[in-house]
Each structure stands twice: as C-alpha cells, then as structure tokens.
Length: 112
Image (cartoon, rainbow, N blue to C red; front, side, top):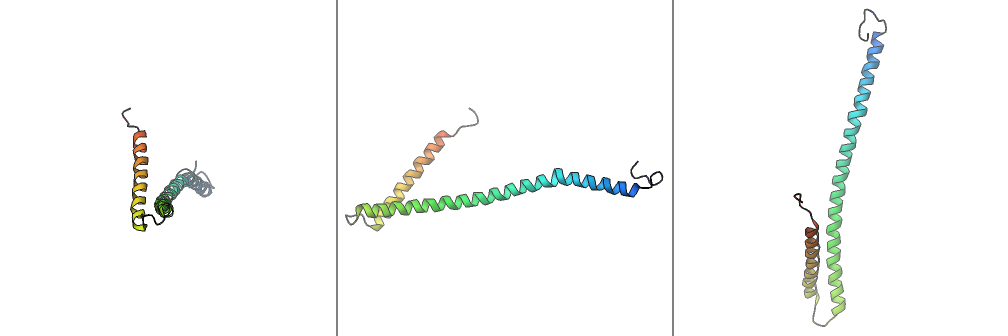
C-alpha cells in the first residue's frame, strides 16, 4: 500500500511518483485546455479590433474614392470639391443604408 512506511521500504519513492502522476494528469487535462481557451479569447479580441480598424479604413477609402471619382467625372462643370464631398457622403450613406436593410431583412428571429 502506497504511503505506509511500516510495510513498504520504498514508500517515499512510490508516493512521490504518485504525486507526480497526479500533477501531470491535472496539468494535461485542465491547464493545457485553459491555456488553449485563453489563447483563443486573446486572438479573437485582437482579430476583432483589427477587423473593426480595417472596416473603418475601407469605408474612409471608399468615401475618398467616390469623392475623387465625382471630381474627375464632373471636372469644372459646376460640382466643385465641397459639393463632391457631400455627394460622396450621400452615396456612401445610401449604400450602407441599403446594405444594412438587406442584412436586417435576412435575419431570423428565434421564434421561427
């Protein structure tokens, strides 16, 4: 029997081996899984932050491209830079409003 010094001369080594095995099993089953979950959470948050930053940058680039396109197309025919800014805001806003409306239409409620 492990841990009985009266009947076993090698009880200390057996007890140390048993403790080492238990600690190894706990580390394998619990600690490694917790590390994987925490890594997933951290990388998920980093990905979310980078995704938001990329989306904002893409919207800014789209707006500037529409402004430049309007200025190039109209030239000096009455739509100046200040008006092309407003028209680009209107065009991009309508585009995002339409995309949001389509996404809202596709959503499903939990009742159905």
